[in-house]
Image: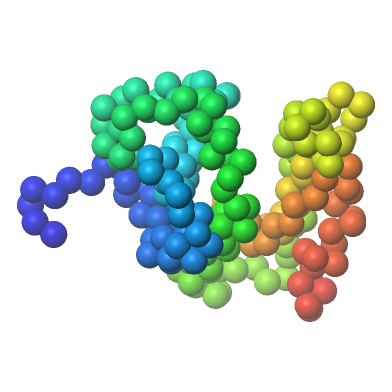
Length: 189
């Protein structure tokens, strides 16, 4: 690396995520087969940035692309909320699950085994609301749809908890229904 090479702090933060394995997985799944402008890597960067900035909707996310520096990072000049929505529907969730599992693996590799509490895990969940008209399969209430992310969390130290495993169900499912999937072979919960 030469002295004139610059990395943005956002780019440094993304480095563990945007690895060779991610781009290989995108090619393997033909995720960007006919894509000319908005690649899956740009999509991932944009939505991770939106998460960090706590954006509330697709219009706010699209407005972020108006920043010249961010345009360079993404390789995009502009994007509309409709394009974001279409891309969001096209991205394979298994690809995002792969990213999550790679990050969990990296955390575990960089954490000393003596720091992990193997005798105690937490099962928790969070519900994400969705539009009932579009996601009828995820009916939650009369006027609302949703999914539930069920996590198995692992303690690294007194202040650090990391997700170790996740399952996704419709929002109606109780955490107890996912115990078999989340409790490891040894029965430690």
